[in-house]
Length: 328
Length: 122
View: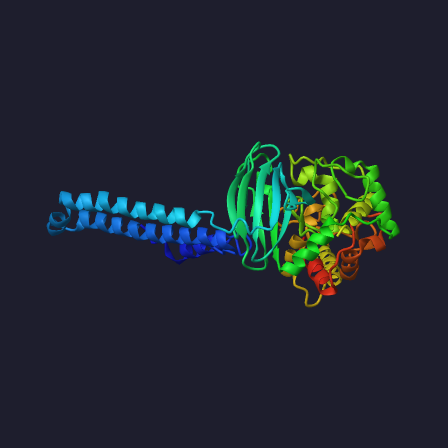
């Protein structure tokens, strides 16, 4: 039998690091993720040690000879090693696991409340005031300040989704007709990728979101900017783009606060230009990708709930995309 | 026999000339085609274009860029030369106002790298 060799080890290491910094449960960025990572390491290392022990005993049993069999073939050893040892270890692991995963973040200190609604195949995000009323609505990107407890209310508009941002927290299912609560706290500034973690349909694999953790002042600035309605553009080509957006009926599904577009079926686009990505993490956010998405969304993400708008002339498509990009 | 040999020789020379002309106009000093490929992936060019060698780049809004290096025009408007390609990538609407392709915020170095990648598509 060939030895696994350096190649296999290298592949394994690459696979483990494949998720990179932005979407890795092994790079905790907050309290919940740290507890999960600790539990993971304890179980993996502990499991590996027990596996090694069991393999060694197997080898001794097969190749060890009479002396080993006499010493370790007795019933008392089987009871000790096969009954007492696992019971103690598993009981200890159970207690440890329950302690690590208990939700002991200071809930009452959560001054930022966010409602996340899973939709096919994007994330509706509403920031709430202390009484639970929405202050602002956005999509596919959550911005939070570091070192503060965030209270998330997780819901679903259609089927079961699951909220998971490996660096910070999750997975918690989002079940239609039910509200699940999740508290989390980010300990460092960064941008982390999250992913729907419960199969929800054709584009489940392309239902991603980003969490940006920023300093408190930047968060206040961002929140203020997000609550402002969109401004009427002055630039003539942006004006034309805005008019085309309305004329094409985009407002039937999308809202741009401050305009006549008040649709709530699809993501709120009031500040779409400020997001890092579009189409739930599928594409970078620039006018070109926006144009491609508008004209061929069904080709890029077949089965998503937005039809392809292959009806525009080249310049019309570009003007609409440039208008949306300007909505920062 | 001598005729056949001359035909073969002349044809080869003609092909060689064509290749030289193309190679010269596609030459971009110090450009990094590999970095260009990464820029293409990050910018989402694949949302509109099919681009060989770029993951998930199979867009149908703009023309496919398969064998782009062999094409004679850019967007049916400009001669396919390195300088023109870089201008096009950075601000297509200025050259062709009716185009769906918007301007992109690339600096000259980045546009050169992207053009170099596109010129590997033969």
